Length: 576
Image 1 (tube, rainbow, N blue to C red):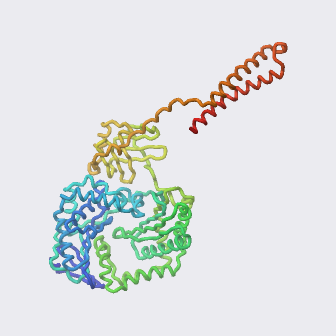
Image 2 (cartoon, rainbow, N blue to C red):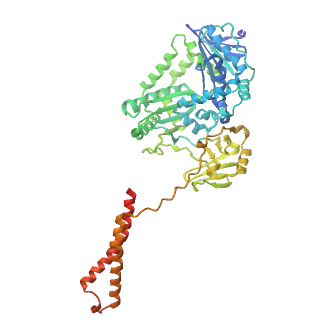
Image 3 (cartoon, helix red, strand yellow):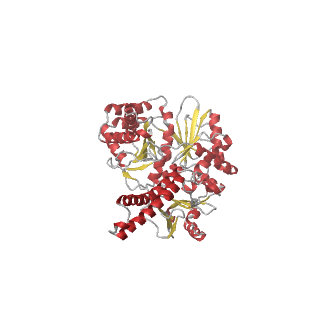
């Protein structure tokens, strides 16, 4: 494939041209050749009902080469990368593009199973849960979800996704060489350039917090991309490590990272782990680090150290080729690339006061994941507000109390469904439903755009089929994923009532106390007392005073022994 005639070279020596309609950047480097083909498509472009389709196209495109480890995908782009001789690069990239033009869809079912296996063995990043809380079940929030759309993706779906997203206009090629290798054929479908998707924030207020599944603390914050934000992240990383690990000993991993999200925004992620017995101290110390940076407690030496590392990356030999992947990503996302000299000027201009301003911006947009259990730290005094765990309103519809728990009620209406329990109320409106998993046994699992979920299990609520048919008709077809049958053991059933306990045999002690002492004492003593009351002062007809006192005590003993015998009998049976 020949390089187009138009070529430009920037101050660092990076050449920009087009190859077969694909924007291409080149910069020479010694050693083996490295090349990358990027497409502006990722998880954030999918819907929850089609989630996994980009990953599926990648696997199908790489099947014939057996090189499934030479690709990566993120929220906003997909990257095919190869290192080797010129012949290796040509073979790999030509093969990828040939497969994208004609995907081996006969492998669809097999690759779906491979993706499920990958997901089962893949660990989750600390910030995955935060993406759901911040963005819901759309755009960048999809990175926190499983690839729930895989069961419903068809052969035509993957062909159409490749035909419209993996196009020449939506791609960027980078090569660490001064020329394009001979024999390169990157013929791809024509299409249009897709901008990065807009974010879909669902948090009503920040800074906010929620309780996660783990025992660590995670902070995420979205702010404008800048040299100051990047350097602040480096200073934050050093402070977390120093205070939480070296000085406090609360954490083994305490770090911070800076991730560009799109052309204009980046995400700062700070994380620290802890043992359960140190979680209270960890939370307090973690929030204390952020508070100190906001207060301006930033050592100039810390800023200088982080800046020196960033500047050193601009002074390495063959810096143009080292910056080539990031240069290509910026070109793909629509962000202007700085020359090395411009980047150096921006870094050198950052001051400690600028970092303090970034610290305030980070905190203003912060979402903090706290340990799963309640911690003995007043996070509200720190300025954090609880992220909502339920919906602000409910639908007005037909109530179906849970068979096993009348305190839980499912409401089905013409515009949505709500689940109400003593501790939570959640609503999914049909018009805002991003996914409904439909099972053959009648179950319907609905996920709203805000990430809240309502599970409709007919057996648990005795919902008639006609009611389910109304739900099916109201949810947009594009949000419905037909699920395979569930094993009978996985279908929830109402808890069966506990069998009645058989009548217990009375203990020996109960029999002795009740029938030998208690009942005779009650009868004899009570009779004599009644007789004494009836005779009044006719002492010649009643026993002597001593005998009367004895019988009185016998009556009282009977009154006390009977309940005592019953209690003793219960205790003996309880131990057995």
